[in-house]
Amino acid sequence: LDAINEHRDLGSGMRVAMRDLEIRGAGSLLGAEQSGNMSGVGFDLFAQMLSQAVANAREGASGEDAVLPPALSDITVNFPEHTYIPEEYVSDADERVLLYRKLACADTPSVVEELREQTSERYGAMPQACTNMFAKSLVRAWANEHGVKLVGVSAGKLTVEPVDVPKDALASLRRASGRYVAQSGKLVLPLKYFGLKEDESLIAAVYEFLVNLSEGTVAPSKDVSRPSSARRGR
Image (cartoon, rainbow, N blue to C red):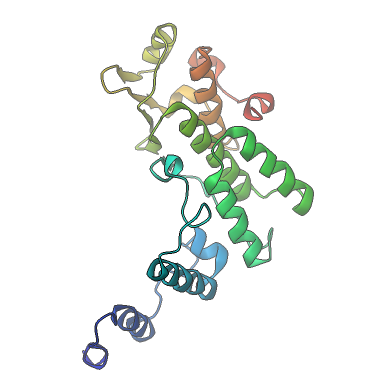
């Protein structure tokens, strides 16, 4: 209450929020559970980025590097696996932010693959979380190319919407208890379809499946156990 009373001027919301952070602490914002961009760049840099964004908005700044391309900003890609760039892999915070931004704006799988090659050449073999990050970007880029707005995993099922499913693929998907609504283009497929082992990546398998789906070459569920590296590289 004292903090609110102290900052009563118009536009003082940010100062109240920062005071609240000082009083109550950051909670898990900087804790071990946090594995997103905040963990990747740190609170100080995040605060600087936020301040710069507010300043740009007030000044009416615009341009290609001010916001993400509209084609990608409304695409939702959700997976339960860890997807981030570890500080131990890319130690420089500015470099991590730049890489996050490039991946977020990568609108085709070929652009993502080029970034993957550049990153591997510069920093060496990727840890699993970073590999997952690039695989997720491949899924988003594929979705951008095919007009898909949602690729997500929840409650043991993969949901893709809207997507065109070739008639030849429907039988295989239905045998795996998959459901497809042609009117809305919504596909729901149990994860058992992929037959993954513990050490195999779900994101990479989903990307393999999506590429096959768009090419009309979806295999029966018993054959989709491990996506080939060649296909993931497309």
